[in-house]
Image (cartoon, rainbow, N blue to C red):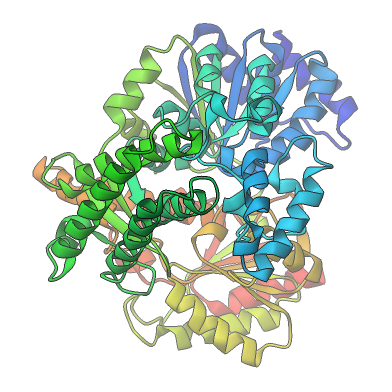
Length: 639
């Protein structure tokens, strides 16, 4: 027997360290497959359904191997859970001498230099921001890591955050006067010395695309890379192998120029004037887009009435601003950095105005205040696949939802993993008795404008029969808000709505309530683990096909058509199936859980592709009778 196999034996190390540990054949299969992959330096793609124990299945082999490993997770929350809970538990019993490190993106660390600068300029800030700054300063004297996540007094999006953290654009690097005390530098140094480094996908690909500095020295030294929540990897890789520029970046640069010229370089009045003019031009450009958040095709929007003149004015003012700044080159390290940023932004802007290049999607997304332009490659298979094949290291990709109809081609082809071995591991849960899937009859069509009233009626009945908690998962914010307004008026229990608070806080309150209702969109379809009575009913409003207005999807669809490929069956359908699997996976998280999943979309039964959705879901008992689902909920309560 191998070392890894010993770990998962009934009397092995895990049984003594974890109360109630039960050997799981699927967990052992996954662990031994990863052990073999590490030895032969190949690639492995594993779908390990809920309950398999995939986290320990990949941590045990990398702890027992001599190799240095990178573990990349889908979110910062999962990253912290791995580093603070799962890894220490296993390391203690398997490899206590191994050094582990947590590494986040630079925006997660306090920048001591920018904090000092912000304090000097505090008089220019609003009273609320000044108060936040005082809290940051107080915390800065106590923190060892400088990880902003420790600062619980402030929200993640507090106005002070951009003032006390750095970006790759405004970081002075080794020229920084407090470089030796830099929290980010120290975190990276610890990561270089560690045997296992826990990162997240965004950080991994930011480094891989050479958009950051420093972290790139770590990845080449790793012998093993494990991606958890790997179903997110293709889309994240596409973002980082592309280019983007935002009005926020341009505005922040202009604001920093103004502050520097009002404090350190007071004789540069022309630069101050040009920076303020440039700020106004950027604001004018933002006004060319609708106020409501949206996504759109940049190739098309570039042609709209006043857009060409607005983009031309922005480019001219940026070019002029850079020329004015160049006259002060060498006078101040921060000014030299701003000149470099200005030149980089100008080059990037001109690149994103040249929308004639093929093989890319040119698109934009807006928030209430800003707009981001993107140039995204339609495929990363050649670039990423080539990197994997020539890297001389082992790669493991795992998630509860990668396969479509028990096949992996949709995932492996998007990443160019044509030589990867695959492994499909079923959940140990008894879905046929623990869960019931209901596809209610007599529903309006998915595009019916008034279908929210029918959905509300179904939701109200399920909630009234369910003394536990209920999730309502939506594919659009419009439907979510309609339902939230209605349910808040008629329900006598707590109703939590995405956006009312941070995701972590909402889930905490929902779980503690025990019988609450939570309404969410995309971010609540995955990465949510609520066990027991707190979640016993999940209602999905309709099949999660990507919005037809999604510019990146449209570009991929058009590219598929030009290549003679069936875009719906190869792109849109597989992505929707994986998203539905994620949403359905919220219901049964433990062998003692019981509950009902309702999918309120007739297309599951009256479209040819409905069977593909059904075949990809866990083997739950099924019904079309809502009353049967209500009875199941009541029976569950009486057990």
